[in-house]
Length: 384
DNA sequence: GTCCCGGTAC
DNA sequence: GTACCGGGAC
Image 1 (tube, rainbow, N blue to C red):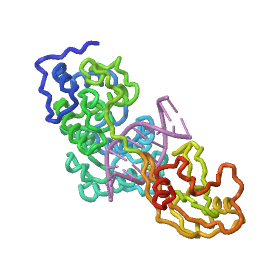
Image 2 (image 1 turned 90 degrees about the vertical axis):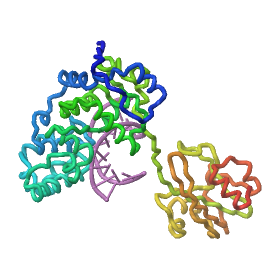
Image 3 (image 1 turned 180 degrees about the horizontal axis):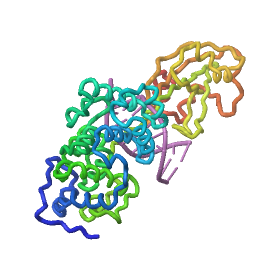
């Protein structure tokens, strides 16, 4: 399907923000994206799912649906919506409910603060707004549980206010279509995308435009495997034309920092110490380190002595903790390791027989490959 | 099993 | 910036 753009509908690329160099080129070639709104709405009318909250302009029901749909897929949220509407047909019914009741119906949906906030907000509206739902974005966003997205959704769907919804779908659709490389999990992104969405919006029908762009993102311009072959605007789409669909939207990857506590046993057995090669599917595979006891949190001397792994290792040998160090922080791309080195004197007896643990002279420590954090420790203690 | 997705409150 | 949650894709 070829998209025919009418010159009369063109507007200038409305953003000062510099996009990628490619976007600039794209801008020259495809200023035609102005039929975006028309095309999208046309697509929406032909492809929309029939959903109960689309049959109403009752702000209460729209609010209910929008809160339920936060962080939630339509298919999962739908039965909850029906249950709530049936049980509480209007706001005052809802406001009279108690929290247990509301939460019971919410059970399984997750993010339970949404339900608690809803009850709170319902009561607020009864008390401070004479039971009448606030009718504009500014008033809506004051309410608990209603942020920028939900305020825009209610304001446009129920009252046709000219405000753009910016949810995950909108980020995706616009970043792909316009070639916006601003990372969507940056604080600057919302402003930029809100501006973009507002520029593209059909101001005569904000409600339908907002519905359309989100439905489009949810069912066609999906995060993975978007259905570009059936897309009515692919010919004007930056990502499609430049084969950049997979890289948009841009998201800053924030590695999850797993926090771990390592207790390294620097044993001294008359000039010898012990090393163990790391074999498991974990960090530092193949490197050597002191016998390690990993704990879920930081531990003190008594806790170390009582630790089952420690007891298993030492068994009946007589030992003495001669020194310990405060935990050293070691940051990897995806983990934070707090490593504490315990210096322990073997007074009498031997460690548990363990083929993996090798006994080595402290003079020869330098011959073994060790993780950075161990290397630093050994250097600090003049051992390498 | 692991990874990815997603609005708001604080 | 991080906690809150469950589901779907792989």
